[in-house]
Length: 100
Image 1: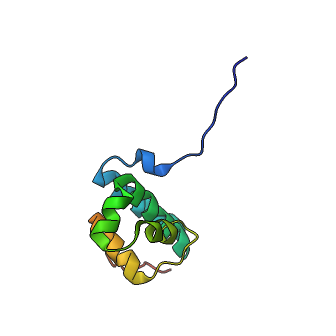
Image 2: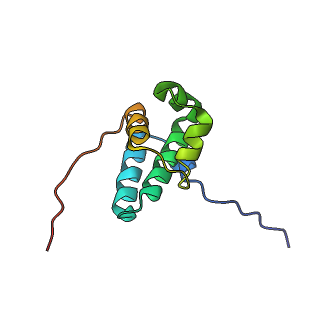
């Protein structure tokens, strides 16, 4: 019987359109709760799908710095997050949370 080769799931491979990217980020933000690293990682996946080199040029940040900051293990500043979101064409939309 043949050997089955498995590879790690990569969300970036499935983010083909801007709508995919926005819906993915919305879902991740809902799932993340207070986990900022989860959101940074989601932005990293979107950035890789769009092209990290292009994003680095648009933000003025180094490509390697972006990889680290958006890895889920980095600790990007809010300014970095805003630059990345702007370069990706994504806005934050404040919304009141319904509390019981």
